[in-house]
Length: 169
Image 1 (cartoon, helix red, strand yellow):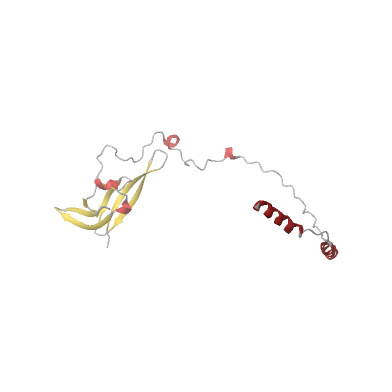
Image 2: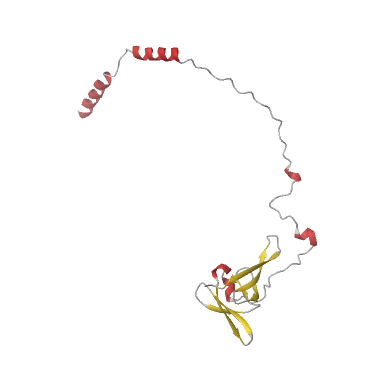
């Protein structure tokens, strides 16, 4: 019963919205057409460019090394890390996580004190290794320790790179 009453109420409401008098709409459209004359601009002239032929097969691949080590000099003869030597404890850490906290001279041997991220102190002398890039200590001063690292060049060779750790305040 409720559904029937709802349906009758909806139809009654909608019947009030129906009107066939559209004179106001027709007057508005007539006025708008009289005052606004629409003009369409002409299309721009199309310029026909000659096609470009891309010949990439004659250009060096940007993702390959400039000098091919195998072709340039036969077998690679540059520096290499010694894979057979035992790894030292400080080689488990990156250089930026290590801190130089002091120097020490014991039996005419200069040592530096390096603190690892775990807070442990290590004595390091020239020839010791530290860092993830096969860093070898090459000089020690009271202000810093200098290292020579071996970094892969991505083509089977190695590049020597200088690095250092300064004394922390």
